[in-house]
Figure 1 (cartoon, one colour):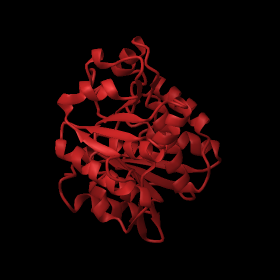
Figure 2: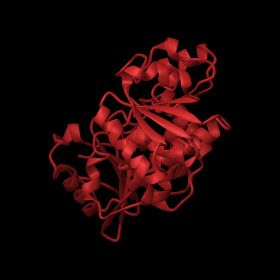
Figure 3: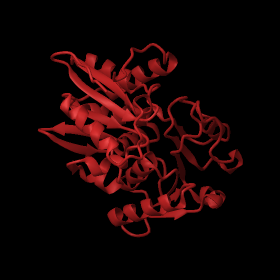
Figure 4: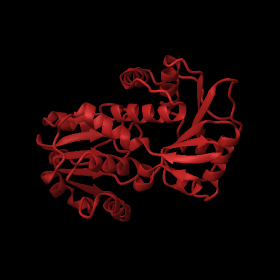
Length: 303
């Protein structure tokens, strides 16, 4: 892997598997230009590079090579949000509590992990569904995105978060971490086959699995379990209107698409990299343009 940049240009990247279709490079670069900054965002795709994410040393090696190449930092995504933890010199408190990192900043030779997924979801919920009830919220998916959303909900004062995942152990582990931070009983793992009872009692549903993406079409929950007293928030943002949101809107649920979270987490990461304060409303316009014309992008792969 050779990372290339230009003099006087801030260089960052994204480490993950199958990240070729990511809109992050164009989203970051458009906003950086609006802020008057020379900025380059490179994709570091494990699949393209032939890197096995199961190799304990592989992620650490990519981090070191990115830092040595002069990058200011990297975003990290599936499947390395948890695997990267063992290769960092320090963690921001929220990233440590969540147990996942999506942003690494290289600072005087140290790699410091942050999580802007949680702050991105918190801001999206505040902007997109202001004032909704959060007495009891179901989170479907206990991976990195689900963990961040659950953390954000509890920071926002949710009384109880029910965690559902096909990997029951992962849901239990997340409930334990959240309990250690927010107190026992605030987060509870629930069996996926009990989702009907969970949703019947819930104020809201946060969907944090890949179902609904273009590559994974379909509904993550049976449509008949949705009811008008339930608000529904998506993590998926491509497409912006998923099958779940369409079904929820059809029965009268207040809904939140995944675009706002994508924008706010990117804005927070851009701030960590640059020290500048992005305009989230402008970034949402960037995202809408990119979703409408996703192929209007440069090649951002590492070579």
